[in-house]
Length: 268
Image 1 (cartoon, one colour):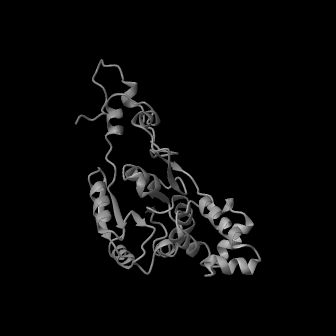
Image 2 (image 1 turned 90 degrees about the vertical axis):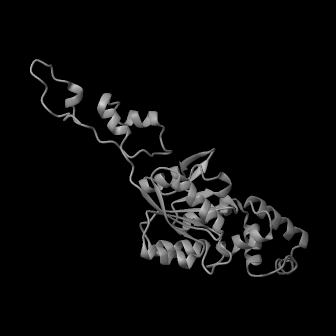
Image 3 (image 1 turned 180 degrees about the horizontal axis):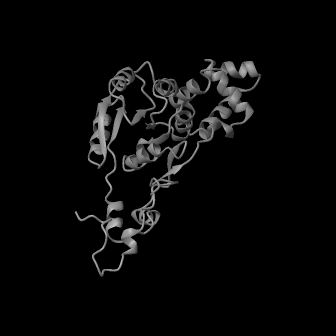
């Protein structure tokens, strides 16, 4: 390839484009990863050879670790990522303990972790905190098929860097991985089909004091009848408060409520 910085031939006027110093290019992620048109704009609109060099710059390989208790998901997500340019899956694990052991042997650039691992001794908030203690600088993206609002907030508080609901599919996963690796935002989520920077708010902020009190009693193992007797209220009133609280928290059944209460009142 010819030396672009070589002096021009005698009688040839200097080319200001070829002699201009290259401007630094910022990482291609702000609120959402930019389109190729935006990337060209941020690159300063260099024409000719320099523009070609900027747009063809090879991205570094991202080493990924995946944890999900369903082998089909770990294999599927891994296969999808490796079909995309710039990703290498080093670990596909179905056990939370095995996941940490594999990371200790071969660290990765980013971890994808299923929030709910019901067959494992470690999952949810406690596991994310444990993982964060072991790897304080490794970006963590959680994904789950459970209640999006509550799970997203719990993952955020536990130290995760992003949340991707399984029903959103894997199409946005490469973009989110690049986003958390940029380190520009504390937490990434998805809204209207786009990856955005968003710090989740507590779902329970919408609950009334009475609803919180009833949920606290349920977390202690009291039945609706027992709560009604303790609070000197009718069973119908207690059931109504419980139902309203579940609707506000987007909890569809008693199992979802039990999982929520385990995380919410675990340390109270």
